[in-house]
Image (cartoon, helix red, strand yellow):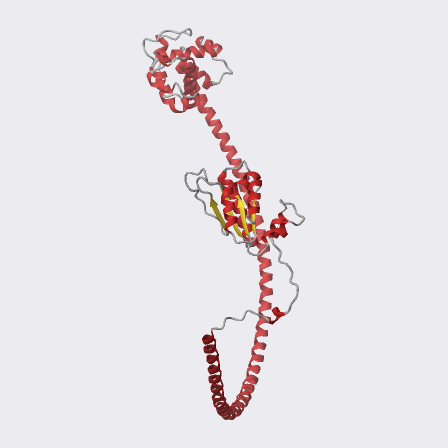
Length: 440
């Protein structure tokens, strides 16, 4: 590696004479890595314009990434770009002045790291820097050889320890296998003894089975003979039973034929009498008999309970028990002033919500009482009919244009026949007085 011939001399005596020295070969790996690290640390104090073109792309890298990805470019720039190497050398003189002064005077500190000395010599290029590189290479190789020897010794010790552990493990496995083999041998002997005993039991069982089979064959033969005799006796009895059933069926058929003739004659006579009675009833135009003998006896009958009698009991007008008693009357009709009730009970809700809540309660009341229920709403100011699906058992009416709900309620009460229980629910005194005069 050679420096450029026009390199300017530095404070350590670096000049043309020193630049003419050339290294005998490539830098040792550790020296090269240290030189790249020194150059990479110099990036922090330089502007991008002061860097060689090949290194500007690494200016924004972190020091670790710069050394990892730009080591080859940095080493090439140090070799070929004297200005960049002078900047690195200037920074090195600032950070390590004692080492730079010693190298410039031709002396090397005895306790200095050979790699650090070689890297500084390569950057500063003092007289004799090639020899320093050679010495550093030899030191590096010797250190590497010593390190390798130490690694080999440690590896050998580790392998010896591993072999010793393996030997102990092999002996333990052998002892365990021998003990397991002994246990298995004893278990095998026990199994063989049990097998011989089981074979003996099987032979005795087979002999007993043969004896039982012989006895079973004898019993089967006796049973077959007895079964044949029993089958013969059963056939004889079945024949006698068939003869008896035939005779019984013949007697029943004869009795049934005789009885059926009498039944036909009696049924014919009954049909004749019924048809004659129906013809006489049609001819005389007789009405159904609705008069009973008990009605001819004179007595005092109790009076019927009217809606006015129920309403005059000792109950308040807003007592639910009064409404239950009125709706318990037969064929009662409940008329509800819709908005009067909803605006009294829950006035803050919208009108559609008021109608839905009231009609839901009236549907349950209609199902419980079986009474006719009519709910009247004021529709005088409506432009179009309200879209509403009345619940089951509840009739929903809106008053016509120009007519109030109060007038519609009075018309409904007047439409009912006198005597029918009509109950009107309203907090309007005018409505209450009007329907009371109409009979509700």
